[in-house]
Length: 294
Image 1 (cartoon, rainbow, N blue to C red):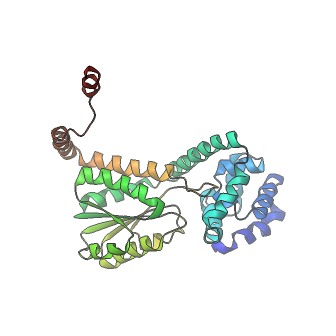
Image 2 (tube, helix red, strand yellow):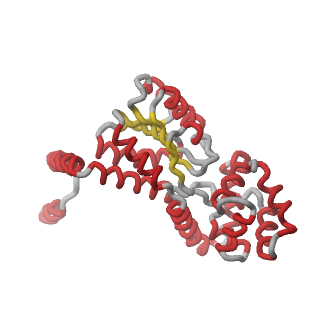
C-alpha cells in the first residue's frame, strides 16, 4: 500500500467498519493535518473510544499497528505543515490551559511507551557492537536534534574517547575528509528532517563507513542510507517535537555500550575521576561551610 493512499484507503473501507471504527475514520478524514501528530491515547481521547479500539482500527486497515498507520499519515502531511501551522494546531488540541499542561506530560509518556513497545532490541545491540568496534564515531545532528546529539556525544566520548560531534554547518565537510570504512556515523533527525544531516549520512554510506540512524519512522529519509535504524516516537500536536522517547532510546543505547565495556570502562572512569578531582570540577559541601565562616 502506498503511503499517499492512506486517507483514500480509510474512506474506501468505511462501509465495512463497525460503529466505533466509523467514528475514528470520520475524525481522521475531517482532521487529516492534525491526527498524524496524535499518540494512540490522544486519538482515543479525541474520538471517545478506547486505545485498544484505535489499535484494532489500524490492524483492520491492514497495518501492523497504529505506529505504521501513523507513519503513512505523517508522510502525507509533514512536508505541508510549517512550524507556525503546528503552533496553531496545538491551540485546538490543548485548549484548556491548566489541563493542557498535564496532557503534554501524558503525550510524552505515550511517546516513551510507544518507543519501548516497538523497540528492535536486536538492532540496538547491533548498534552498540558497531560503536564499540569502530575507530572513530561521528555524531551528526542539526537544529533541535543537536540537543540529542550532544547528549549522545558526551557519554560515548566519556566511555570510548573516540567520538566527534558534527553539526551540519558549512565547515563540516572538511572534517569528514578522513572518513573511511573503519568509522561509524550516527545520524539523528526527526520530521521535519534536515537536508544536511541526510546528505552527510549518505556521504558516509558512499565512503563505506557504518551508518546508524536514530529517527522517528521507517519512512524517514535517513533510513535508505542507514545500516542500522533505531526508531523512536516523537509526535506531539504542537510546534515542537517530543524528544523524551528518543532520549530514552539513547539512554538505553549508552547503558548497553557501557555494560559491554565492563571492567575497561570501570578503569577509564576511575582515571577520569582522578582528573576531575585534580581540577576540582564538582561542587563540594565544604565550599558552603567555608563561605559561611567568612
